[in-house]
Image 1 (cartoon, rainbow, N blue to C red):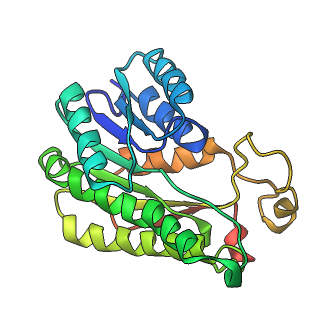
Image 2: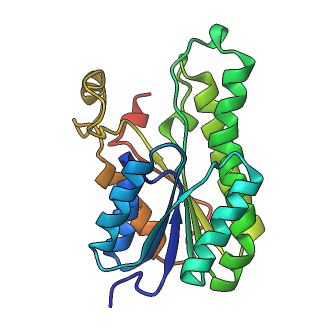
Length: 243
């Protein structure tokens, strides 16, 4: 029997990139998967087919994690399909490079709407169902939430807030629900050409991370002891040691 067989997981923003890899890893462990997408419908449909090819049920739900109604509808759709919710992975996120003195109020608010309010709304709506299932929440944070990057102030602070939200939820939702966070460093997702090579020399492990590295950390929290909660696990090859 696979580790997550008979479980149902919801992964936000999982049509492509890291989220897709996370969803596939969970499906490979036997979980039925709901993914959300906002604009990448074709990618979402393709990912669902890949998930089903692993022998699990899967659905793609158009959702905007910034919207309370949209989040509520996404949870309802997941429950309607699977009848349960055991794992929530808050992966949907926003990233942007901008000098601090040039960040507009609109840019600042948009970053927090997705990176902080989104996981809050998803967790709040999923809470009663995860409580019944004695489930788990895994937030996807960032090395930027632990170290100040001068050209990513709005991103870094939104992820730092998500890290604190993880700790707060871990206390508030215990003992029924475990809540943890995976904080990736520089991850080469195959869709960005160049620009990240210089981080390799700063990284003790002498390479950038991969989506599979992040997925392995998510799988640890998804299948490991429920007694582990309130943890922020860096997946950065040691890059944070020199940041």
